[in-house]
Amino acid sequence: MPSVSSRRLSMRTLTSLVGASALVLTGAALPAKADDAVTPPDQKVIVNGAGWGHGKGMSQYGAAGAAKQGLSYDKIIAFYYTGTTLGSLPKGNTMRVWITADTDSGLHFRPAAGLQVYDTAGHKVNLPTSSKYTKWRISRRGTSRVLYYRNAAGKYVTYKSKLNAKRSWWVKNTKTGTVKLAMPNGSTRTYSGRMALRFKGSSAVTVNYLSMETYLRSVVPAEMPASWATEALKAQAVAARTYAAKERQAKPAGYIYDICDTSACQVYKDNSTRYASTDAAIAATANKVVLYKGALALTQFSSSNGGWAASYIGLPYLSAKQDPYDPVRTWTKTITASSLQKAYPSIGAFTTIQVTTRTGVGPFNGQGRALLVKISGTAGSITVSGGSFKSKFGLKETLFSFTTSGVNTAAK
Image 1: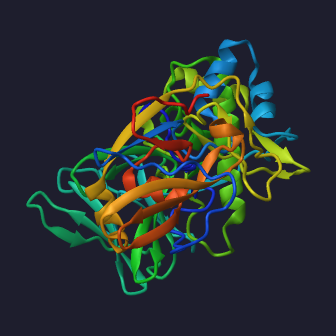
Image 2 (image 1 turned 180 degrees about the vertical axis):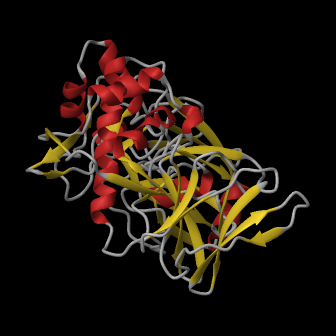
């Protein structure tokens, strides 16, 4: 399922119920309703699981399944975010997106007719486009910004202007409304809106400023295949819009961006990824957001919940329940004893593994996702969170069990 987000992972920000860090409880007593301990005769543990992501909120495959069954986007939203309503954002709101792959602490952009750099003091400079100028760069020098151009010989030269070096600067194109960002690897990405070099600690990062609805045009097709059912795309647009607005709302005053562009937040790509189908879904749901008791909801979503939605403690609209729309996709992974011993050297020679606590609802006697996992060996045992174990061994979900055979019971 690589075509849809496996985060939120979460949107994408999104972690397993207990978290990605290990919860170490050496020698902890086993609570009730623990799975049977597994002692593999061939020193190989088979992990059988279902789903991909954290399982909270909307299942993207589930949304597609619901749409195929005739549910409209608002019904899909209502199912995955229990007790919520739809509301509207005010028009004209702006998103500030950190372009994380621009890692060279400078803002490099390609020459084009209509390019302009301006500052918060009201100064502006229209950049020339002759063959003398092969690339532009804004760099940080202490607490100041400096504008350079690269000449035909490949040398960067300071470009003098009346811009206030102590103020924030933006780059925009008054003709096209786009900026061609020159990336550190030599590629070019075209983004709508304007770009700024914002100071972060002793370094600097590139931030894209653009309207919410334009931002979504490069988010929705990055999170869900544009060929999917229209109502599923609309549900994704509403969830993504709400998630972005919630992230923006949570940022403290003075923060230099609202959201990042990776699955640690939600995926945002350049203009080359846009499609007519997702543009139409965004337009059809313009400004629509998910509200719970009048406030923006945390509209987490993941690729697949394995047929069982996970809960989020403290957020009643993200509840654990069976999902009849998710086309359950099971998976299997084999982990060797040597891998377990390397990951947890304090146990000595590996002997047994066991899910000692589960949470939510789902398969495995109705107990749901693995919350705690106990790994034992000749020198002792260690208990870690299901989220930690998932991350350690690259599993897709915490909806799993351990066996010595390939029989997958995760969907039962």
